[in-house]
Length: 501
Length: 92
Ligand code: SF4
Ligand code: SF4
Image (cartoon, rainbow over all chains, first blue to last red; front, side, top):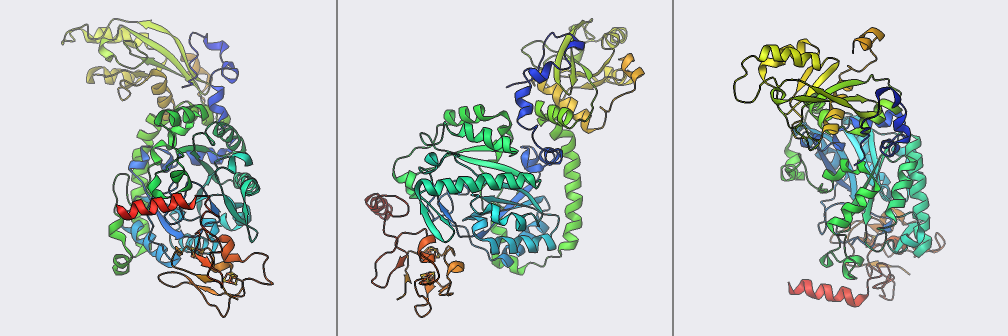
C-alpha cells in the first residue's frame, strides 16, 4: 500500500513533497493516460466491484475460429483461460446473437456491456464479430461493446473496430520476449502460413504491442490480461506490466493458469502447474496496486447472463428468444431510467468507498483540475482506523486532504461530548467547545455520531460522517475527498473563505 | 487431388473463409470439403490454407488418408500422453 500520508510535515512546505515522495508510484500508473480515458475508467461500472452488483454484462459466442494456439488451451473446448474451462459455448450466428442481446437487455435492464470473447478469437472472425457489432450499434446504441483478443490481427482491424460503440478492448499479453513466447505459443497463422516457435511468438508480440499502441492512440481503453505460468512467464510479467502500462493500458490483470489434466491442454498434460494463491498475490502486488480493481472480475463466466452471482442464461435459449416479442426502443427508455437510478445510487456509495489515492492524485493532479485542500477531523482510539464515537472523543486528529494526498496536521484536544456513561447531561456546552476545536474542518469522521450534535455540526459547516467506521483513516479521508470533488465542492474557494479556514 | 475433413473436426469455422475455392462448407456432424472443388490450394497458396489453420491434429486428411497435421505436430502434446488421457476419460 502506498498512500501519500505525509505525517508531520508542516502544511506549507509540502506542496511538492509528493512528486518526489511516496505517492509518485501510484500516480505513475495512470498519469500517462489522456484525460478522457481516465474519466471513462473511473466512471465505468465494470471497473468497480460494487457496481458489479448493480450492472450486468453478457457474452455472445459468435467467434469460433482462432488464429493462434496457446499451450493452456484445448481447441476442443472454449478457451480455458479466457472463459470457462471444458465447456463448449452454444455458437451464435450474428443475427441470433443480436436477438439474444436485445432480449436480455430488454428483460434485464441492468445489462450494460456486451462482450465478444470467443470461443476463438473475435478478430480471427472479423465478419461475424463486426456484423454483430454493426447491428448492435444500430439497434441498441445504449449497449457498450467489448472485445477480448490475442492481438494478432488487431492492427489490421483497428479501423473497423473503432467504428463501433467499443467500450474497451482486452488484449491477452503473456510476454514481450519471443523466447518466453515460444514456450507459450506453439504456432500462429500469419499471412496464410502456419508459423511455429520463436518466430511465431515474435510476430504475435509485435502485433500485440502495435495494436495496443494504436488503440491507445485512438482513445480506446485497453486492458491487458496475462496468464501467470510459473517457471515460464511469472518473473517476466513484471516487465510486461511496466511496458503495457507505459504504453497506455489502463489496467493489467494477472490471472492464474488453469491447467487441469482433464482439459487436455499441453500444460495440463505435461504437468505444468498453475500458481499458488500466494504466488499470484505476490505477483499482482508487485505489478501494481490498481489491479485490485479487476480482481472481482476474474471469475466471470463467459456464458453467464445476469448480475453477479446469478445466471439467467437458461431464460435466453434460442428457442425461448424466438418466442419473445421485443420492442427495443421502448425497452431502451426503461433501461435509461434504470441506469440513471443505479448511477445515482452508486455515485454516493461507489466513489466514497472505492476511490483511493489514485483517484485523488489522478483526477486532481494530472487532470489539472484545481481542487482545494480540505481539513478533516478524525475520531480514533488508535490502530489507524476510525473507531471512536464522536461523543467519546477526547481529541481529534486533524488531516488535510488535497490533490497531493493526505497529510496529518495535528491533534486537537477537547472534552468528550458524552463524558463516559450513557447520559450526555451538559452536552450542549461541551459541544460548543468541540465545535471551536473543529473550526476550519469541513468533515468529522467517527465511528458514530449522535443525532443531537449532528445539527450544530452541520450548522457550523462541519459534515459529520459515520459511514467509514473501522476503515483506515487515510482511505476514508481520500474517499470523502473524492466524494466532495465529485459533488463539485472542491472548486477553489475565494481567498477570504480560505482565510477563514 | 483433394483433402478430406473427418469427424475429429470441432466445427470451428477457421478453415472455411480461407479456402480459395470455396470447397469447405458447414455440415453436421462436422465440416466437409467438396472434393470436386478442392485443389489443395495449388497455385493459390504455398500452404494449403485449411491445413495451415486447423487447430485439430488429424482432422484433415490427404488423398492417401494420412493426417496432414499428425498427432503432436500442433500442440506438442506427446501422442502417448493424449492417449492416456483419452483412456482415463473413457474409463471414468
Ligand atoms: S486444401 Fe485449399 S482448396 Fe482444398 S479445401 Fe483446403 S483450403 Fe480449400
Ligand atoms: S479448421 Fe479444422 S476443426 Fe476447424 S472447422 Fe476446419 S477442419 Fe474443422
